Image (cartoon, rainbow, N blue to C red; front, side, top):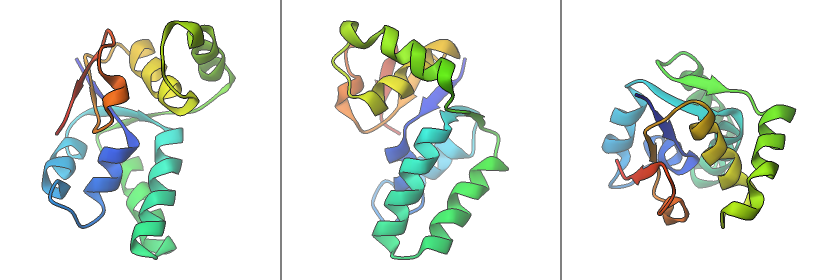
Length: 125
C-alpha cells in the first residue's frame, strides 16, 4: 500500500525545522500527493525561505521522485463535494482525503490532526 503525503510534510522537508530529516525520508519513498499539495507547499516554502526560485525547485524535485502526483481536476473536485456532508474537513483537506481514498492509500502522512478519526489513519513522519 501507499501513503498520501500532505503539504505540511512537504513544507517541513524543504525548510529548516526539527522534523526536516523525517519528512525527507517520507519523500524519498513511494508516496502519493496531488497538485494542490504542491501548490500549497510551493507557496509556504516561498514565504518561509523568502526565495521563490528555491521553492519552485523544491516542488520540481518531487516531479522527479518516486511519488505519484495526482492532478487536481474536475473529477477530484466533484468527488470531494460529494463527501462534504460526511466529514468535518475544509475544502483543501477534503480534496487531499479524497485523493487518498481514490488511490487506496493506507495512511496519510500529515501533522494536521483534522485527518484524525477518518477511515485512513493519519501518521506523523
